[in-house]
Image (tube, rainbow, N blue to C red):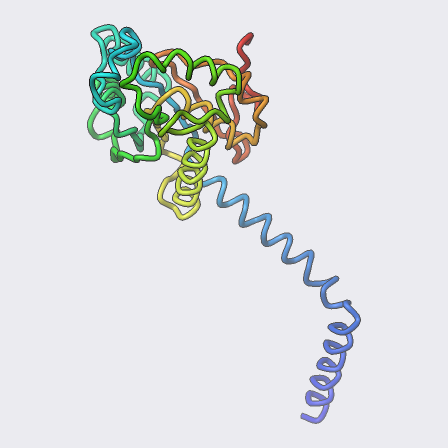
Length: 261
C-alpha cells in the first residue's frame, strides 16, 4: 500500500514537472494531431460522392432582353426550348448517377423550379430524398430595370468595372452574391459534417450561372481574377464536382474552367 502511495506521489510530481517544463505537451500534441486527422478523415468520408451544379434552361428573358422591365425577374419562365433542355439535362444526369439518390436544392425563381420539374422526369420518386428551396440560391438582383434607357449604360459600366465589384443601382454586385454563396456553403458543409447527408447521396443544386461560378470560386478559394476568367455556363449545363480523398474536385482539378478551356 505504501509503495502504491509513493508511486502516485512520484507520478504526480513528474506530471507537474512535465507540465511546467512543456514536456507534457510534447507527449500530448502528437496524440491530439492524430485524433484531429482521424476525425477529419471520417468527416470527409461521410460526404456525398458528387455535387452537381445545374443552370436553369433557356428563359424568356434570355430571348427577350426587355422582359424584366415588365414582370418580376423571379417570375420569368422557361421557353419551349428551355423545357426541352431541362428534359435532356435530366437524361444526362440520370446517365451519370443511375439509381443513386439525390438531395436537391433549388433557387426559388420560377425558371429554376421549372427546370427541376423537367429534370426530375428522368428519375424515380424514390431517388429524390427531398427538394428544398433556398433564397440564397437566387439570381443576382439587378435593381430597378424598368427604365430600359439606363440599362445599356449600366451594362457598359459593369463591363468596365468588372462583374464582381460593380453593383447595380438598387441591386447587387457579384461580391454581394458571393456573400450569399459563402453563407450557403457554410450551411451545406455543416449539414454534411453533422450527418445530414451520406456517401450514397448526390447533391443537386439548380440555380443560376453567376451563382455557379461564385460557388466554384468560394469552394476552391479562387481569387477575383480567376472568377473574371471563368467561362459562362450555358443553359442547363451541368457542372460536376467529384469527391477524391474527401475533397471535391472539378474534373479531377481545382483550377477554374477558363473561357478558352
